[in-house]
Image 1 (spheres, rainbow, N blue to C red):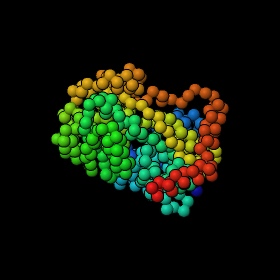
Image 2 (spheres, rainbow, N blue to C red; image 1 turned 180 degrees about the vertical axis):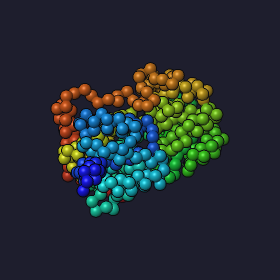
Image 3 (cartoon, rainbow, N blue to C red; image 1 turned 60 degrees about the vertical axis):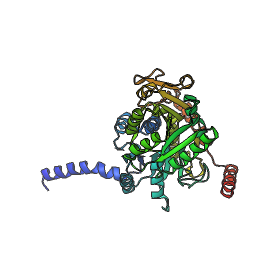
Image 4 (cartoon, rainbow, N blue to C red; image 1 turned 120 degrees about the horizontal axis):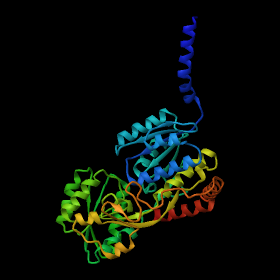
Length: 399
Protein backbone atom coordinates (compact mmCIF):
# COMPACT_ATOMS: atom_id res chain seq x y z
CA UNK A 1 0.00 0.00 0.00
CA UNK A 2 1.31 3.44 -0.88
CA UNK A 3 1.72 6.16 1.73
CA UNK A 4 -0.98 8.17 -0.03
CA UNK A 5 -3.45 5.26 0.07
CA UNK A 6 -2.65 4.61 3.70
CA UNK A 7 -3.22 8.27 4.54
CA UNK A 8 -6.55 8.27 2.72
CA UNK A 9 -7.61 5.12 4.58
CA UNK A 10 -6.67 6.68 7.91
CA UNK A 11 -8.61 9.87 7.11
CA UNK A 12 -11.61 7.84 6.03
CA UNK A 13 -11.54 5.88 9.32
CA UNK A 14 -11.33 9.09 11.31
CA UNK A 15 -14.38 10.45 9.50
CA UNK A 16 -16.57 7.39 10.00
CA UNK A 17 -15.33 6.30 13.43
CA UNK A 18 -17.24 8.98 15.40
CA UNK A 19 -20.46 8.00 13.64
CA UNK A 20 -19.97 4.35 14.51
CA UNK A 21 -19.15 5.29 18.08
CA UNK A 22 -22.26 7.46 18.33
CA UNK A 23 -24.40 4.57 17.11
CA UNK A 24 -22.77 1.98 19.36
CA UNK A 25 -22.57 3.96 22.60
CA UNK A 26 -24.91 3.37 25.53
CA UNK A 27 -26.14 6.94 25.92
CA UNK A 28 -29.91 7.08 26.51
CA UNK A 29 -32.01 8.34 23.62
CA UNK A 30 -34.91 10.64 24.40
CA UNK A 31 -37.74 11.26 21.92
CA UNK A 32 -39.08 14.79 22.45
CA UNK A 33 -42.64 14.74 21.08
CA UNK A 34 -44.77 17.88 20.62
CA UNK A 35 -48.25 17.95 19.12
CA UNK A 36 -47.64 21.54 18.05
CA UNK A 37 -46.36 24.89 19.26
CA UNK A 38 -48.11 26.81 22.02
CA UNK A 39 -47.09 28.92 24.98
CA UNK A 40 -48.29 26.05 27.23
CA UNK A 41 -45.77 23.70 25.66
CA UNK A 42 -43.08 26.39 25.51
CA UNK A 43 -43.18 26.87 29.28
CA UNK A 44 -42.82 23.14 29.96
CA UNK A 45 -40.09 22.74 27.33
CA UNK A 46 -38.04 25.52 28.87
CA UNK A 47 -38.43 23.97 32.30
CA UNK A 48 -37.28 20.49 31.23
CA UNK A 49 -34.27 21.93 29.41
CA UNK A 50 -33.43 24.05 32.47
CA UNK A 51 -33.42 20.89 34.59
CA UNK A 52 -31.35 18.88 32.10
CA UNK A 53 -28.81 21.69 31.90
CA UNK A 54 -28.49 22.31 35.63
CA UNK A 55 -27.90 18.56 36.15
CA UNK A 56 -25.26 18.51 33.42
CA UNK A 57 -27.09 16.23 30.99
CA UNK A 58 -26.83 18.89 28.28
CA UNK A 59 -24.24 21.64 27.87
CA UNK A 60 -24.83 25.20 26.69
CA UNK A 61 -24.11 24.39 23.03
CA UNK A 62 -26.52 21.46 23.08
CA UNK A 63 -29.09 23.62 24.84
CA UNK A 64 -28.83 26.20 22.05
CA UNK A 65 -29.57 23.54 19.44
CA UNK A 66 -32.57 22.26 21.39
CA UNK A 67 -33.84 25.81 21.88
CA UNK A 68 -33.68 26.03 18.09
CA UNK A 69 -35.82 22.86 17.90
CA UNK A 70 -33.02 20.66 16.60
CA UNK A 71 -32.05 17.12 17.60
CA UNK A 72 -28.73 16.44 19.30
CA UNK A 73 -26.27 13.58 19.72
CA UNK A 74 -24.96 14.92 23.00
CA UNK A 75 -22.12 14.06 25.29
CA UNK A 76 -24.43 12.36 27.81
CA UNK A 77 -27.79 11.92 26.06
CA UNK A 78 -29.25 11.92 22.57
CA UNK A 79 -32.49 13.84 21.99
CA UNK A 80 -34.67 13.37 18.92
CA UNK A 81 -36.66 16.61 18.64
CA UNK A 82 -40.04 16.20 16.97
CA UNK A 83 -43.02 18.47 16.32
CA UNK A 84 -46.10 16.79 14.83
CA UNK A 85 -47.51 20.15 13.66
CA UNK A 86 -51.00 19.07 14.79
CA UNK A 87 -50.95 16.13 12.35
CA UNK A 88 -51.61 12.51 13.44
CA UNK A 89 -49.78 11.31 10.32
CA UNK A 90 -46.68 13.35 11.18
CA UNK A 91 -46.89 12.17 14.79
CA UNK A 92 -46.66 8.55 13.66
CA UNK A 93 -43.74 9.37 11.35
CA UNK A 94 -41.91 10.85 14.35
CA UNK A 95 -42.67 7.79 16.46
CA UNK A 96 -41.33 5.46 13.75
CA UNK A 97 -38.16 7.56 13.60
CA UNK A 98 -37.79 7.20 17.36
CA UNK A 99 -38.17 3.43 17.10
CA UNK A 100 -35.51 3.33 14.39
CA UNK A 101 -33.11 5.07 16.77
CA UNK A 102 -33.86 2.73 19.70
CA UNK A 103 -35.61 5.30 21.84
CA UNK A 104 -35.39 4.74 25.59
CA UNK A 105 -37.79 7.43 26.83
CA UNK A 106 -40.60 9.39 25.20
CA UNK A 107 -41.22 12.88 26.57
CA UNK A 108 -44.65 13.98 25.35
CA UNK A 109 -46.44 17.32 25.52
CA UNK A 110 -50.25 17.68 25.51
CA UNK A 111 -52.96 15.05 25.88
CA UNK A 112 -53.18 14.39 22.14
CA UNK A 113 -49.49 13.60 21.66
CA UNK A 114 -49.39 11.53 24.84
CA UNK A 115 -52.35 9.48 23.68
CA UNK A 116 -50.85 8.82 20.25
CA UNK A 117 -47.50 7.70 21.67
CA UNK A 118 -49.11 5.56 24.36
CA UNK A 119 -51.25 3.61 21.90
CA UNK A 120 -48.22 3.14 19.65
CA UNK A 121 -46.13 1.47 22.38
CA UNK A 122 -48.57 -0.11 24.83
CA UNK A 123 -48.44 -3.61 23.24
CA UNK A 124 -44.63 -3.82 23.36
CA UNK A 125 -43.20 -6.52 25.62
CA UNK A 126 -40.65 -4.04 26.93
CA UNK A 127 -41.88 -0.59 25.82
CA UNK A 128 -39.87 2.61 26.10
CA UNK A 129 -40.69 4.72 29.13
CA UNK A 130 -43.28 7.45 28.69
CA UNK A 131 -43.10 10.67 30.72
CA UNK A 132 -45.78 13.19 29.80
CA UNK A 133 -46.45 16.79 30.74
CA UNK A 134 -48.98 19.54 29.89
CA UNK A 135 -51.38 16.61 29.64
CA UNK A 136 -54.77 17.25 31.21
CA UNK A 137 -56.56 14.08 30.11
CA UNK A 138 -54.50 10.92 30.70
CA UNK A 139 -57.36 9.26 32.60
CA UNK A 140 -60.15 9.97 30.14
CA UNK A 141 -58.05 8.90 27.13
CA UNK A 142 -57.06 5.52 28.56
CA UNK A 143 -53.39 6.27 29.19
CA UNK A 144 -53.91 5.62 32.90
CA UNK A 145 -56.81 4.96 35.27
CA UNK A 146 -55.53 7.07 38.16
CA UNK A 147 -52.25 8.45 39.44
CA UNK A 148 -51.07 5.05 40.76
CA UNK A 149 -53.16 2.63 38.69
CA UNK A 150 -51.37 2.84 35.39
CA UNK A 151 -48.98 0.91 33.12
CA UNK A 152 -45.57 0.46 34.74
CA UNK A 153 -43.83 2.30 31.89
CA UNK A 154 -45.90 5.47 32.30
CA UNK A 155 -45.72 8.53 34.54
CA UNK A 156 -46.00 12.28 34.11
CA UNK A 157 -47.64 15.47 35.29
CA UNK A 158 -51.29 16.49 35.10
CA UNK A 159 -52.46 20.11 35.29
CA UNK A 160 -55.93 19.67 36.75
CA UNK A 161 -58.48 21.86 34.99
CA UNK A 162 -61.14 22.91 37.50
CA UNK A 163 -64.15 24.02 35.50
CA UNK A 164 -65.78 24.84 38.85
CA UNK A 165 -63.46 27.86 38.94
CA UNK A 166 -63.56 28.69 35.22
CA UNK A 167 -67.30 28.79 34.48
CA UNK A 168 -68.04 31.44 37.17
CA UNK A 169 -65.74 33.83 35.27
CA UNK A 170 -68.65 34.31 32.84
CA UNK A 171 -70.83 35.66 35.63
CA UNK A 172 -67.98 37.64 37.14
CA UNK A 173 -67.86 39.45 33.81
CA UNK A 174 -71.63 39.85 33.55
CA UNK A 175 -73.78 38.82 36.56
CA UNK A 176 -76.90 39.11 34.37
CA UNK A 177 -75.65 36.71 31.68
CA UNK A 178 -78.21 34.01 30.80
CA UNK A 179 -76.83 32.16 27.75
CA UNK A 180 -73.25 31.37 26.76
CA UNK A 181 -71.90 29.34 23.87
CA UNK A 182 -69.28 26.60 23.95
CA UNK A 183 -67.16 25.25 21.10
CA UNK A 184 -65.61 21.79 21.36
CA UNK A 185 -64.13 18.96 19.30
CA UNK A 186 -65.89 15.54 19.32
CA UNK A 187 -62.57 14.11 18.08
CA UNK A 188 -60.87 14.90 21.38
CA UNK A 189 -62.14 13.12 24.47
CA UNK A 190 -60.86 15.80 26.85
CA UNK A 191 -62.84 18.38 24.91
CA UNK A 192 -66.06 16.34 25.07
CA UNK A 193 -65.70 15.78 28.78
CA UNK A 194 -64.90 19.47 29.28
CA UNK A 195 -67.99 20.77 27.52
CA UNK A 196 -70.19 18.32 29.43
CA UNK A 197 -68.70 19.53 32.71
CA UNK A 198 -69.08 23.19 31.70
CA UNK A 199 -72.73 22.60 30.86
CA UNK A 200 -73.39 20.89 34.18
CA UNK A 201 -71.72 23.61 36.25
CA UNK A 202 -73.39 26.41 34.28
CA UNK A 203 -76.83 24.91 34.90
CA UNK A 204 -76.17 24.94 38.65
CA UNK A 205 -75.42 28.67 38.32
CA UNK A 206 -78.60 29.43 36.35
CA UNK A 207 -76.68 29.77 33.07
CA UNK A 208 -77.58 27.97 29.84
CA UNK A 209 -74.79 26.62 27.61
CA UNK A 210 -75.33 26.16 23.87
CA UNK A 211 -72.61 23.85 22.50
CA UNK A 212 -71.34 23.71 18.91
CA UNK A 213 -69.00 20.94 17.69
CA UNK A 214 -66.21 21.54 15.18
CA UNK A 215 -64.25 18.95 13.20
CA UNK A 216 -61.93 21.30 11.28
CA UNK A 217 -60.87 24.95 11.48
CA UNK A 218 -63.27 25.98 8.71
CA UNK A 219 -66.19 24.82 10.90
CA UNK A 220 -65.57 27.79 13.17
CA UNK A 221 -67.35 30.14 10.77
CA UNK A 222 -70.63 28.26 11.06
CA UNK A 223 -70.20 27.43 14.74
CA UNK A 224 -69.79 31.07 15.81
CA UNK A 225 -72.61 32.18 13.50
CA UNK A 226 -74.91 29.53 15.00
CA UNK A 227 -74.06 30.65 18.52
CA UNK A 228 -74.66 34.30 17.68
CA UNK A 229 -78.01 33.43 16.10
CA UNK A 230 -79.02 31.72 19.35
CA UNK A 231 -78.30 34.84 21.38
CA UNK A 232 -75.23 33.78 23.34
CA UNK A 233 -73.57 36.57 25.29
CA UNK A 234 -70.08 35.02 25.46
CA UNK A 235 -68.18 31.94 24.30
CA UNK A 236 -66.35 29.52 26.58
CA UNK A 237 -63.78 27.03 25.29
CA UNK A 238 -62.95 23.78 27.13
CA UNK A 239 -59.46 22.34 27.02
CA UNK A 240 -58.62 21.08 23.54
CA UNK A 241 -55.99 21.61 20.88
CA UNK A 242 -56.98 23.32 17.63
CA UNK A 243 -55.31 25.45 14.98
CA UNK A 244 -58.07 28.01 14.49
CA UNK A 245 -57.22 30.25 17.42
CA UNK A 246 -56.68 33.36 15.31
CA UNK A 247 -59.83 32.75 13.26
CA UNK A 248 -61.93 32.28 16.39
CA UNK A 249 -60.65 35.55 17.81
CA UNK A 250 -61.38 37.38 14.56
CA UNK A 251 -64.93 36.04 14.54
CA UNK A 252 -65.39 37.02 18.17
CA UNK A 253 -64.43 40.58 17.22
CA UNK A 254 -66.94 40.57 14.36
CA UNK A 255 -69.79 39.36 16.56
CA UNK A 256 -68.80 41.33 19.67
CA UNK A 257 -68.55 38.21 21.85
CA UNK A 258 -65.99 37.91 24.65
CA UNK A 259 -64.20 34.54 24.72
CA UNK A 260 -63.25 32.71 27.91
CA UNK A 261 -60.51 30.11 27.42
CA UNK A 262 -59.72 27.34 29.90
CA UNK A 263 -56.11 28.43 30.32
CA UNK A 264 -54.76 31.77 31.63
CA UNK A 265 -52.01 31.98 29.02
CA UNK A 266 -54.59 32.19 26.23
CA UNK A 267 -55.40 35.71 27.41
CA UNK A 268 -51.92 36.69 26.18
CA UNK A 269 -52.67 35.04 22.83
CA UNK A 270 -55.72 37.26 22.38
CA UNK A 271 -58.49 35.63 24.39
CA UNK A 272 -60.64 38.06 26.35
CA UNK A 273 -60.34 36.04 29.56
CA UNK A 274 -58.18 33.02 30.28
CA UNK A 275 -58.75 31.01 33.43
CA UNK A 276 -57.48 27.65 34.57
CA UNK A 277 -54.29 25.90 35.58
CA UNK A 278 -51.42 28.30 36.25
CA UNK A 279 -48.10 26.58 36.77
CA UNK A 280 -47.01 24.97 33.52
CA UNK A 281 -43.36 25.83 34.11
CA UNK A 282 -43.57 23.96 37.40
CA UNK A 283 -45.14 21.00 35.56
CA UNK A 284 -42.15 20.94 33.23
CA UNK A 285 -39.74 21.09 36.16
CA UNK A 286 -41.40 18.05 37.70
CA UNK A 287 -41.35 16.13 34.41
CA UNK A 288 -37.67 17.06 34.07
CA UNK A 289 -36.98 15.77 37.57
CA UNK A 290 -38.76 12.53 36.71
CA UNK A 291 -36.54 12.15 33.65
CA UNK A 292 -33.38 12.91 35.63
CA UNK A 293 -34.49 10.50 38.36
CA UNK A 294 -35.03 7.75 35.80
CA UNK A 295 -31.70 8.38 34.07
CA UNK A 296 -29.82 8.41 37.38
CA UNK A 297 -31.62 5.34 38.72
CA UNK A 298 -33.29 7.33 41.50
CA UNK A 299 -36.86 6.87 40.23
CA UNK A 300 -38.73 3.67 39.44
CA UNK A 301 -41.36 4.78 36.95
CA UNK A 302 -43.38 1.64 37.59
CA UNK A 303 -43.90 2.44 41.27
CA UNK A 304 -44.08 6.24 41.00
CA UNK A 305 -47.34 8.13 40.77
CA UNK A 306 -48.47 10.61 38.18
CA UNK A 307 -48.20 14.08 39.72
CA UNK A 308 -51.37 16.17 39.83
CA UNK A 309 -51.69 19.85 40.73
CA UNK A 310 -54.58 22.31 40.77
CA UNK A 311 -53.00 25.79 40.80
CA UNK A 312 -55.61 28.22 39.45
CA UNK A 313 -55.50 31.79 38.18
CA UNK A 314 -57.11 33.93 35.50
CA UNK A 315 -55.89 36.72 33.23
CA UNK A 316 -57.57 39.42 31.15
CA UNK A 317 -56.76 40.93 27.74
CA UNK A 318 -58.04 44.51 27.46
CA UNK A 319 -56.92 44.74 23.83
CA UNK A 320 -59.23 41.86 22.88
CA UNK A 321 -62.07 43.35 24.92
CA UNK A 322 -61.68 46.64 23.06
CA UNK A 323 -61.87 44.90 19.68
CA UNK A 324 -65.02 43.11 20.82
CA UNK A 325 -66.45 46.36 22.23
CA UNK A 326 -66.68 44.70 25.64
CA UNK A 327 -66.02 46.40 28.97
CA UNK A 328 -64.28 44.10 31.45
CA UNK A 329 -65.83 44.11 34.91
CA UNK A 330 -63.92 45.59 37.81
CA UNK A 331 -64.31 42.28 39.66
CA UNK A 332 -62.26 40.52 36.99
CA UNK A 333 -59.67 43.28 36.83
CA UNK A 334 -59.18 43.16 40.60
CA UNK A 335 -58.68 39.37 40.67
CA UNK A 336 -56.58 38.86 37.55
CA UNK A 337 -53.09 37.36 37.90
CA UNK A 338 -52.08 39.65 35.06
CA UNK A 339 -53.68 42.05 32.59
CA UNK A 340 -52.61 42.48 28.97
CA UNK A 341 -52.96 45.98 27.55
CA UNK A 342 -51.29 47.42 24.45
CA UNK A 343 -49.74 44.00 23.89
CA UNK A 344 -47.92 43.93 27.23
CA UNK A 345 -48.40 42.98 30.84
CA UNK A 346 -47.50 45.38 33.64
CA UNK A 347 -46.93 42.31 35.83
CA UNK A 348 -43.88 41.30 33.78
CA UNK A 349 -45.48 38.27 32.13
CA UNK A 350 -44.56 37.81 28.45
CA UNK A 351 -46.34 36.37 25.44
CA UNK A 352 -43.66 33.70 24.94
CA UNK A 353 -43.71 32.55 28.57
CA UNK A 354 -47.02 33.73 30.06
CA UNK A 355 -46.32 32.97 33.70
CA UNK A 356 -44.56 34.95 36.40
CA UNK A 357 -42.19 32.20 37.59
CA UNK A 358 -40.18 30.80 34.68
CA UNK A 359 -36.78 30.01 36.20
CA UNK A 360 -35.42 27.43 38.60
CA UNK A 361 -34.97 28.69 42.17
CA UNK A 362 -31.45 29.69 43.12
CA UNK A 363 -29.75 27.05 45.28
CA UNK A 364 -26.59 25.00 45.43
CA UNK A 365 -26.41 21.77 43.46
CA UNK A 366 -26.40 19.77 46.69
CA UNK A 367 -29.51 21.58 47.97
CA UNK A 368 -31.28 21.10 44.65
CA UNK A 369 -30.51 17.40 44.45
CA UNK A 370 -31.63 16.82 48.04
CA UNK A 371 -34.90 18.66 47.45
CA UNK A 372 -35.56 16.86 44.16
CA UNK A 373 -34.84 13.43 45.63
CA UNK A 374 -37.19 14.15 48.53
CA UNK A 375 -39.90 15.17 46.06
CA UNK A 376 -39.43 12.05 43.94
CA UNK A 377 -39.57 9.86 47.06
CA UNK A 378 -42.98 11.37 47.82
CA UNK A 379 -44.33 10.04 44.52
CA UNK A 380 -44.14 6.41 45.65
CA UNK A 381 -47.32 4.44 45.04
CA UNK A 382 -47.67 2.68 48.36
CA UNK A 383 -50.02 -0.31 48.71
CA UNK A 384 -52.36 1.96 50.69
CA UNK A 385 -52.53 4.55 47.91
CA UNK A 386 -53.13 1.90 45.28
CA UNK A 387 -55.88 0.25 47.33
CA UNK A 388 -57.57 3.59 47.97
CA UNK A 389 -57.55 4.54 44.30
CA UNK A 390 -58.77 1.11 43.20
CA UNK A 391 -61.65 1.30 45.65
CA UNK A 392 -62.61 4.70 44.29
CA UNK A 393 -62.49 3.41 40.69
CA UNK A 394 -64.59 0.39 41.63
CA UNK A 395 -67.16 2.60 43.36
CA UNK A 396 -67.39 4.91 40.35
CA UNK A 397 -67.81 1.99 37.95
CA UNK A 398 -70.83 0.68 39.84
CA UNK A 399 -72.48 4.04 40.51
